[in-house]
Image (cartoon, rainbow, N blue to C red; front, side, top):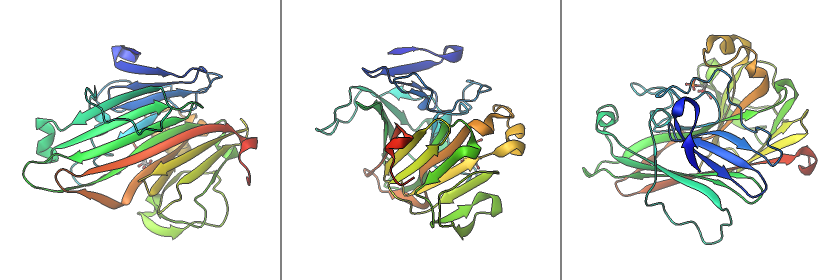
Length: 296
Ligand code: TA6
């Protein structure tokens, strides 16, 4: 359902038969809401989010392309999350065995002014779908459409803000014992300890070569988020904690207690595409009752 969201911005609402829903703004191709059949908000959206393009909306799932992080002249996390996407008039066909009904296909192409800062032509396609169980599935396809024979290199991330009851009661399973780059220590490389991650201070780590499946256990709400990813070997874990929270104007001082970013990404080894080549990155997230997840 296409409609107007905050500040009259264009958005699409996806509804699944059991009442699960998702909302995506054409600004940034950004998912801002994902609800289960009890209408619970599963993604974090700051109460101070500005909804003022071109700045990205604080929360939800932001598309970071052509880079995650800051590399020379490009803005932090690239320009895709700060651009207006459009509905794809010619989307790629669904794989035969898919059963989801609620979906939207968006596309972002290079703009002439953008070519000045990133001298490449590309097509970035994004499919957002709700599965039969209310799972949220994102598929990105990036194609090099350069006509000058030039390859290009990029990094990519689904910058995802999960809503949690109390960050001090959250555990993340699947990243233990892995190497990570610590953004708080000059991106130095360390090895994670042997058990699930817990949180009692600012964290900003890029875990490398992570498993397909990562679990976020929200103890209080007896709910577990399960991430399954493909083509996205790394995972960024971020919570700004109190000091950084105060420094962000589009983020409430106390909101760090109710969110955690676990971002499926391709950061350590940038992707190189020749003209005509296409890369695909998939993320599927489900929210299940914690009793469901064994071995917690
Ligand atoms: O998620 C990791 C991170 O790179 C943090 O360092 C922090 O900057 C966060 O992204 C948010 O970035 P943003 O540009 O959206 O404020």
